[in-house]
Amino acid sequence: MTAPITQDVLTIPRKPPEGQKPNLIGLTRPQLRAALIEHGTPEKQARMREAQIWQWLYHWGVRDFASMTNLSKDYRAFLENRFDIRVPEVVTRQVSADGTRKYLLRIDGGHEVEAVYIPEEGRGTLCISSQVGCTLTCSFCHTGTQKLVRNLTASEIVGQVLIARDDLGDWSVPGQPKREERLVSNIVLMGMGEPLYNFENVRDAMKIVMDGEGIALSRRRITLSTSGVVPEIARTAEEIGCLLAISFHATTDAVRDRLVPINKKWNIETLLNALREYPRLSNSERITFEYVMLKGVNDSDEDARRLVKLIRGIPAKINLIPFNEWPGAPYQRSDWERIEAFADIIFKAGYASPIRTPRGEDIMAACGQLKSATERGRKSRAQIAAEAAAQPSAG
Ligand code: SAH
Ligand code: SF4
Image 1 (tube, rainbow, N blue to C red):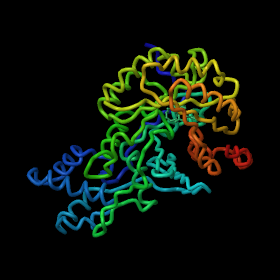
Image 2 (cartoon, rainbow, N blue to C red; image 1 turned 30 degrees about the vertical axis):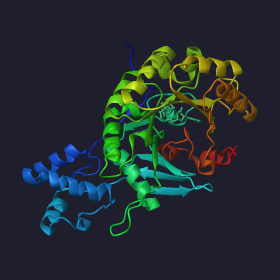
Image 3 (cartoon, rainbow, N blue to C red; image 1 turned 90 degrees about the vertical axis):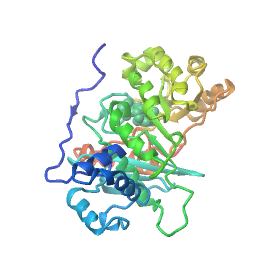
Image 4 (tube, helix red, strand yellow; image 1 turned 180 degrees about the vertical axis):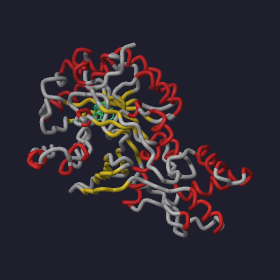
């Protein structure tokens, strides 16, 4: 097999900051218990302590040991001396006119990632990042142009969820009636990075988020989007079991090679074969095929017909994404009539074909526009001003 399709990036290993106590956020339940035992909690007590601490962290959203009132004072002091409860630092928080919230977060090493909250009728979706930057180089994606890449830890992935829930006041409050409605009701791994190139951390983070005694989001409310890392797709079904979205974007290998270069390694046929197995392995519903609409590149009637033919037999939903233009992007968004004509062909073939409404465009919160400010900081002021002026209007 050929080497992974990567650009000439600097992949930074994560260096645990010196002098810091181990962080409890991001440990899975077995890891949490092991850490408690390792630091001196008697084994007989460990299971109960694990359950108590877990509830404080992930059901009540507590961030300090002093608040864990069902633990003895001594045990709280014991924890305080040995562990931390840390989440990434919120650098900026922007709220769009349409209610979309974008968080710029700083992680260890000074790198920055973004998370975006999108409120909708009856649900709220949090779009989270799995890497700083991305080693893949999809030609329409702003994140893919970033030269700096580091995998996020499970802690940093879960941390994005905790921060959004803090900001939205989405935690249960002791003594108050149980809240059935969640503001963060859905999670999509569609921010920066390729989640399947950071499999273990993404899996552990999602295990934490799905745990019934904590945040308790059902696996059916989590969607992982991948550009098509074929060998990890079956593993996603077996070890996470969440819904899957595929960045499909083209109906011939020639065009997909150009848009999603990982296609040169695992082409359309190989990808589709892996996808056919997914619903059975994960016992889940339809797979979402994401399709970014690029003017004159992949948006013809012929493309639409080829698309439905290709995915025949796979329980699927096709999500048409109007291209989010970014400064210097080599593509343009398809005209609205073209997108509708394309959607119509798909609809007539029997597929739901929602067109994703661009959200939060005034704060550059849309898919594919996420790029860290560390990177942005290297640009001149003029460049930043030009970028701000070039924001596309909501369409
Ligand atoms: N790396 C993963 C997940 C992050 S990208 C993946 O590629 O699937 C999330 C979605 O946004 C993908 O479908 C991606 O193709 C799409 N996307 C990236 N840049 C975009 C842009 N400029 N406009 C519209 N969609 C974009
Ligand atoms: Fe990476 Fe996804 Fe962007 Fe491709 S579309 S460069 S895989 S983040």
